[in-house]
Length: 232
Ligand SMILES: [Zn+2]
View 1 (cartoon, rainbow, N blue to C red):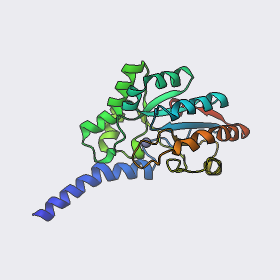
View 2: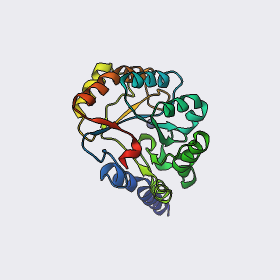
View 3: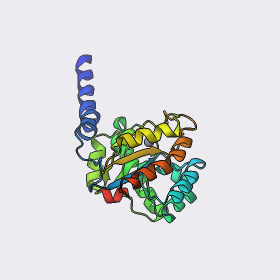
View 4: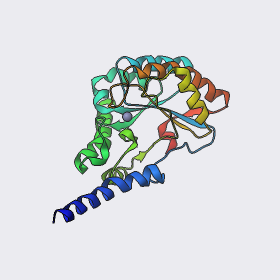
């Protein structure tokens, strides 16, 4: 009897959490991983806003004259609304990374909805914006996520360039890794907070320091920056 129970639970887990992972991350279905047009590169930052790092990142982006998309954690956005206002005022885009930095695959449908649609509604109400692009925390979703996104006409944007910037890494090494992977339709993901589980303290320092060289390389190749909503 217990074996049957275990088998049923495992089967449910496979369908609810495993297959959606293979479907999105493995097969690239129901998600976007590259920009639609060659020559368009998306620069995206996850996990913020952070009171120390994000304003300095915004300074660096302003200095470099580049537009980026911030996939924010709604709880952090509510805690630091002035930083979100600044992102918007400076031409960046704010999209949804989650309500909290939770591991979505094992969340029940109600909490799953709060991570995507719920966080979107909170951001819409607080900041008067219409986010419709979701990047699940750790890029991992479940069956309920896919149903919710379809029902609410939201899309999922993952990435094509990820370089382990949540670990403390010399900025020149980050630049080297990004440049090695960069192509004409890249979606680059970086992180502007070190408070998420798994992040090393101080890691965003290098991200901020790497931004000018990354922007310069993108420009040198003749690419332009696009926002997440332009990738749908
Ligand atoms: Zn994240």
